[in-house]
Length: 488
Figure 1 (cartoon, rainbow, N blue to C red):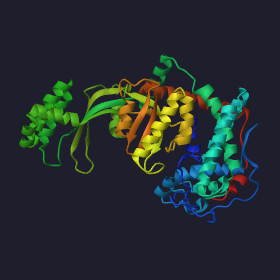
Figure 2: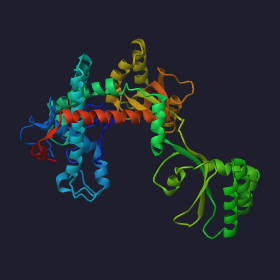
Figure 3: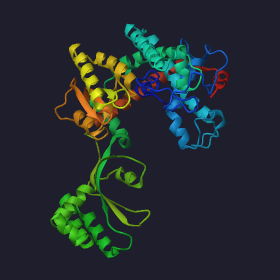
Figure 4: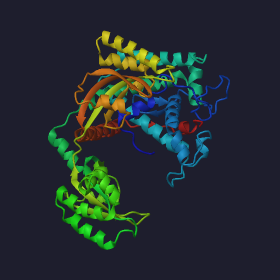
């Protein structure tokens, strides 16, 4: 909450969900029910006043009250679980509920509206930058907007409604297609600048190294062994002290294993050691199980110690377990280092089983049909994005099914295995089956994680610099009374 949402690629996924394939209208009370309401159900929040009056404006662009209702509705839907986590009730007016995550005393409405206004301000600045660079909505943008409207009409028709009633039932408040269309038009214009001016920024190896060195805790990782040296009072303190001395003297992993072998031999069940094939094999297995690799910085005492200046491999940190008082040793395998692991960008179209398609066989058959169509048309990424908007049941359908910076193990196994096949090259495609259905895959790129992170950080800083500079030239004005009149 209350953070600047300054990376457009993150924001776009939040907003472009209204026409998502397979989305079920929610009840007007909680905006999350899977049972469609009746068309005559009373809306929880009815808006009054001039919807078309500018509420958040810059020199050449503005978000109207109606458009701000839409932005707020999107943020509200995304925040429902957080509201509940902090003791709130999404089914009750947010203006009557205090935001309990801090001591501000603000209402949930105030907090979420701050995000909506912040969101609008950033898009207005990007629109101003687009205008200054001569960018306008082109035929591709108009086709995209037409696709959104057609998708909305298709979703509405499934319930026997028009798109206006569908929107109202979807969000539980008065929202017109005009409001959504107006917001999307500004977002498309804003994204032109971001894609052409920010995403294309490149940086020298020296700049990446400098950014990494200046912000080690943001990008560096450490490897270590976590060794349990005790079990309350069960292990003699003398043995623990002797083992600590040996660990601290262990300059490499060979010496570490020798120190640990003696300790484990005296503290572990003889049957377990014998079953493993002897103490050397037991120790190898113990270290393998307790090896922590590529661990990112957090605010723990250990990480503060690990990232301290001058830290080196072989250093040891001790900490007692809070509940058992057992001492733990953290043996550094590496000082803070660059994360040289691979991250991938990949697009997918999800043909979802049990939702859009009744069986896995039906989902697979449709995926094969669309995959062949795409191949016959030349396997173009732009066409893949269009097909994604039309067929994918994943919530990122309207952003071309793109997942960026995917790490090993983040996705389900078959999806992961396809992405991280060592032979995988940009432009590769295929079909992958998971428990969710069949995925039509397009491999976009592979990058080294620390380089990807530092590039994104530098792009974010340059983006923020330009937005702040533009805000001085074309400051934003907010009609607070109009904002406050929004019912929620």
